[in-house]
Image (tube, rainbow over all chains, first blue to last red; front, side, top):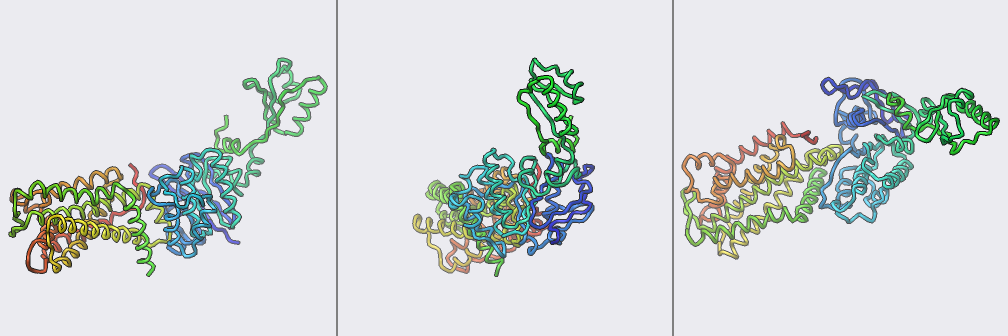
Length: 301
Length: 259
C-alpha cells in the first residue's frame, strides 16, 4: 500500500528562524504516526503544512498523493482535522454542531455513531458551553472524524487534560485505529506517544533527531540503570571499584547506568552474594521514551 | 443545489445561536423597540411633524423609520463583524476552511441569517408603531421597505466584512461596531431631527451609508402617495456596499490574527 503522507526535504522559515529544517518522513496507511517535540520544535508548523494551511519554502509534500496547497474539496473530503486550539459557539448543542459538520462531507458517519466513538452519547443535547474542557476536546475530535476520514490529524489533542481524561482519550483513539483510520498525532507527552504510536519521529529545533518504533528508539539510545537504597553498611566507593560499575549517590539512593546490563548486574550480584551485602530496594530500570527524548534532544546532563 | 442547501443550514445554525443568546435579542430587538417608545414619549407630544428632506413627516413615522434602520445596521454591521472576528479568533473559521465546505457558504449563511433577523426586527417595529401609535403604512410602501432592507443588509454587512481585517479581536469588534453605529445615527436623522444639525454636517452625512436609507424608509412610511422608492439610497449604499465587498474580498483572512 502506498504512503498516505510523504515528506521530502521540507523546510520552512519565518524570517531568520528556521522552523522546519529539511525533514523527511513517510506515514503508511493504517498507522498512528507520532511527531514528538517540545513547544517550538516545529510540530505544528509541519502539521499545518500537511493540512494545507501553510506552504513550505523548500521540499515536497504529498498527502493522499496531493500537494496540500492544491488540495480542493475532494481532497478535504478525505481528511479530518483536530487543530491545536479552537473554540465553539457555546449556545449550540453537541449534536447540532456535529450535524452541521456532517453536511460538509460526502460520506459522513451518523451523528450518533460519532458521538458514541468519542464517548459523548449522553451529552448529545447538551449545549457546548456547559461541557468541561476535556469534553469539548472530544467534540473537536467528533468534528474531525464525522466525515469518515482516511487520514486524521490530531495536533496536541490532550494538552490540558488530567491523567484520567488522557487515559480515556487514548482508549478512544485505539478504537479509531481499529477502524483503519491513519492518524498523525503531535504531542509533547512521551507517555502518550509510547502508548499510542506505531512509529515516532522526534523533532528538535526543526530537525528530526530520531525516528522509529518506541522500542527501537529506546533500544537505540537508552541505557538500563540499576538503583538501590544507600544503606550505612554499604561502602559505595569500594563497591564501585570492586565491580567496575560507576555508582553515584543521589539523595538516599545509589544508582548507576549500565553499559552492558546483563554482565554488569551479574558481577554486582555475585559480589554482594560473596561479601554478604544486602541491597535494599534493588531495582533495574529500563529507559523510557522520556530518557530517549532528553538524550536525542541533547538535554540529558 | 449543494451551495444553497449548505447556506440554509448555516443560516439556521446561526439563527438558533441568536435566539438562544439573551444579549443578541436584547440589543437586537428590545433596544430599538425601547428607543422607539422612549423617543416617541419625549418628542411625540412636543412636535407634530419633523421636516425630512423637504417633507414634513409625523414624529412616530420619523422615529419608526429611523430606529428601524438603526436596528438593522446595528444587527447586520455589528453582527457580522462580531461573528466573523469572533469565529476567526476562536479558530472556527480556520476549521471550516479545512472542510470540503465551499468557502462562500459561511458568508452566505451569515448574510441570510442577518436578513432574516432584520426582517423580523422590521415587522416588530412596524407592529409596535401600528398597534401602539396608530401609524398606518400603505401596502404599496411595504415592497419599498422590503427592498430597502435588502439594500441595507447588503451594504452594512459588506461594511462589517471590510473591517474584519483591521479589527483583530472580538473585544474590539464588540465596541467599535455599536459605537460607530450610534455616532453615525446621531448625524443621520435617527435620534435627532435633521434640521437641528448644521448644513455642512447634513451634507457630509448624506454621503455616509446611513442617512440616505433612513430618509428613504421614513418617506416610504410617511408619504401618502407614490411607490415609496427614492433612487438616492440605492446609489449611495450600492457604492458603499460594492466598494466594501471588494475591500473584503482583497483583505479577508481565515486565520486567527496574532495580537
